[in-house]
Amino acid sequence: MRLEGKVAVISGACSGLGRATALRFAQEGAKLVLGDINEQAASALIDEIVAAGSEAMFVRLDVRNESNWVELFEQSQARFGQVDVVMNSAGIAVPGNVEDMSFEDWKRELDVNLNGTFFGTKHGMKALKTRGGSIINLSSIEGIVGIDTYAAYSAGKAGVRNLTKSAALHAGRKGYKVRVNSIHPGYIKTPMVGDDPAELARLARLHPIGHLGEPMDIANMALFLASDESKFATGAEFVIDGGFLAQ
Image 1: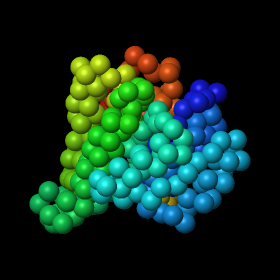
Image 2: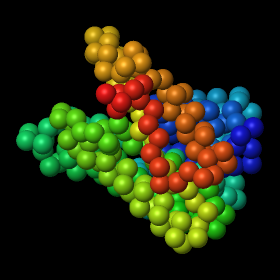
Image 3: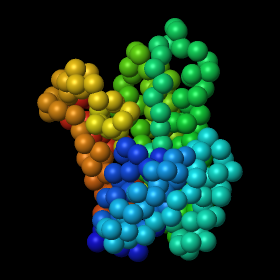
């Protein structure tokens, strides 16, 4: 059991990559704190985690609200007595190019993807710095290269990339035993990508490997970063993209 005895906080835990990661962590012995705005989906996920032999609690979390983060870590400590892993996976994708996008859409995107990750990293660092642990931030291939039709998404995920590096340097120079890394997925079969067959086929062709990724592909990388196997990795970006960025 690679996460035996560890407690993991995951934002955006009730769908997509967060959900897959929560289940993968549970399979490896972690106890879970599920942060999300979707209370309905939490019950079924907790049942699956219990079936995997672990335990979990749900805390309603709007990642844009700093006080929600404070409450989440207080409740985590009260229930489990510790936090060892924080994964910031909550995210949205608002379309719009730099010429036509409204400021309201720009701000809505960054409030979730960048500000939410900032709050999770900030308060995660406070929770982990004495005991040590791992912070995992979900960025994107579009945090490394841009995409013309998603200006705010590209900007936010690029911000997550360098926020991660800044936080890793801060932790190291303060002497905290906290590692901070980012994951950069290619296109993954999640609700965010949709289910239109023609669009899925088009996206698959963008990846030299010839197909889209599965949520568990990202969950397995998160598992490595959450475990002690990655003890020498910090401030790094882990690309899981079927060869997209190799082109």
